[in-house]
Length: 413
Image 1 (cartoon, rainbow, N blue to C red):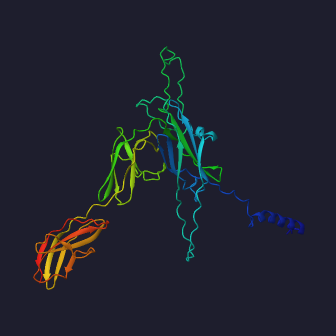
Image 2 (image 1 turned 90 degrees about the vertical axis):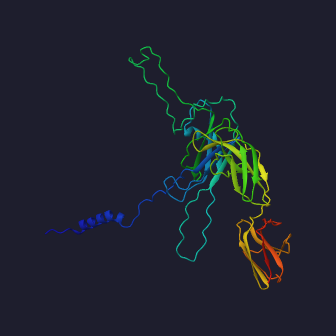
Image 3 (image 1 turned 45 degrees about the horizontal axis):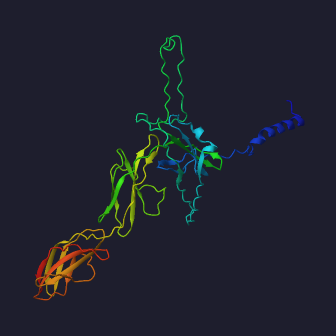
């Protein structure tokens, strides 16, 4: 049997160590850090008024790859106006440095969580989108003729395809002398300003670009007329007259100070010419209404100028309902009364009225209202004929009294 000499054996062991050593706990090169970009902005709505465009949206809640927390630094707004008859632009034509019209700042960092005695960490709160508002003054285009009703705006694709013309062959109508019909390339019905919202992370990392937001720059709806504000014991009611057929309406709080970016009180446009809200006595309220029409594409609406604001300060002059079912029970040295209560939002209680003899004028037995529906008169004298009634009163100053309940007569014992 042959035996390895010491030198070959050493060389063999050295080769084994060279092969095995890289796998014995040594780490490879570090992976590049993940640098996600923000996903698209959410809750996008656009309102076009007579001289301005208001773009509302919320910050992204996830990154483009679905990871959290979202990385969001700012949102840039780009806009490009395209004349009537031309094609809708490709988004890449809008997102150009020369078309940048605004920037909305970085989201504030979340507040630190309070320390708890429990060693188990509280779960992270779900990401919350922060609403942002951008306003741009835009002059109405009065030069372009109004578009015919039969030519609505076409859907806005990501890239507008250009129709191709079929080649002329020997067998085609053109080759045979027939008149070829030129291809129809749809254009914009009215001058339109296109907006795009681009979120960024880490200053220059581009997130998911929004869809094109086409805003017609032609005439806005006709303003409503004759706004009137009234109230009763429960509600404030605004009524108005429509400005043109097919309008819907948004109602706004016009109590000073007014803000152009205020959201309407109506979550969806009203199809009726009436709006109500609960009354608050003693608090001034001003409301105004705008006519609304939906634009042909996207979450865009067109609003008229506001009708003059209607204002009122409700005063509580409305008494509660009158009690009923009053009954008197005579006992030695007292008279017990019971009645059916009433329901009123500002009910303070009841005043028990008493008169003697003919009872032409009844007087309250106590200065403060009774909160229940029964009362015992301990001042009744034996042999005296009494007449009783009950009225309800509210919390107004001075208090409003209801009409009297039914009257009852009873002799003291």
